[in-house]
Length: 296
Image 1 (cartoon, helix red, strand yellow):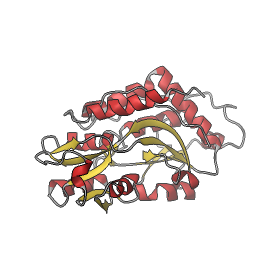
Image 2 (cartoon, rainbow, N blue to C red):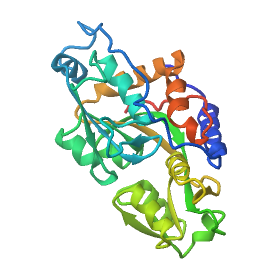
Image 3 (cartoon, rainbow, N blue to C red):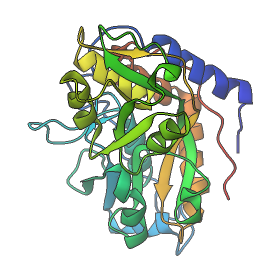
Image 4 (cartoon, one colour):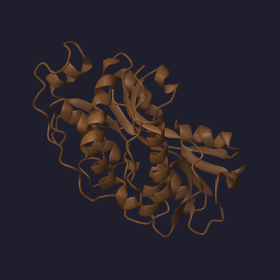
């Protein structure tokens, strides 16, 4: 496995944070990059491996978010989701010799609270849904990567005097139920309030129900760009979030395969191209690829 230095991961987080205050569009209006399916799956994967099973079946179920502009988003008129999570998913799908643009891919909406249950039950084969890698999650599911390093920040009204996490102590701050962000903001002294989606939190900030919402800075940048002039991202990052790919814990062989696809994408520029296409319009600078964590 080709590992990069810890400095690369740190630089990635800094670069993401640096661009969050910039204005721009919430993401591309198209369906992203065209990724051609590979044609080398005959004997490519070990017999009996989950990758071989998926390649032989020619179908895959992918869990994703729908309310995170630039990361994982699907509007009412969109046939398929789009965003950085989706672009990474396409690389994995294509490596299984499945056409990412075909109806052989079932894009299954997930929310923060059902990602583990969907993997455990087999409803989805992989989850790419702003899915932070944590020790607790790895007790019940497998996680590989990360393919992005970001950090938690705050989203507030444009005229808010809140400048950072110290200013929300004792205040109600919205985040999504089941997310690491909700637990982190509580630990920082705020009154974390759970919601079903990030878009719901943003609406509650806009209508004054809550003074702030919190999650990964990349997600907040997309929401701020979607509501340009009304919302802004504030403060330094107060957590480090390693965003990875979830898979069933009973298929540990998937970790090395996922990491191999990511390493290739880091090396050939397709990772950077996907990042620039999806998160660049929100003002996020393209960082160096992150360091992959060892498979457990």
